[in-house]
Length: 61
Image 1 (tube, one colour):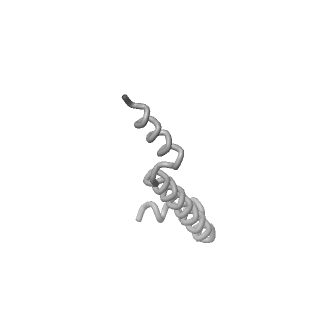
Image 2 (image 1 turned 90 degrees about the horizontal axis):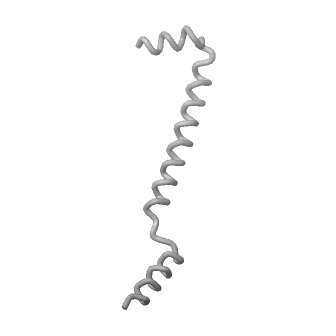
């Protein structure tokens, strides 16, 4: 409640909807970025790294 009153005093009632929209867009972009990063981490290894590990196994005595 105190935060809402402080925001009204600092920014005024006309600016608050704009700030809310900007905050929402920022949050959505952040979620997209973290989701993409997490999917990148969970993806299977690339074809080149699989080739390298097979070559390493073939070269073992």
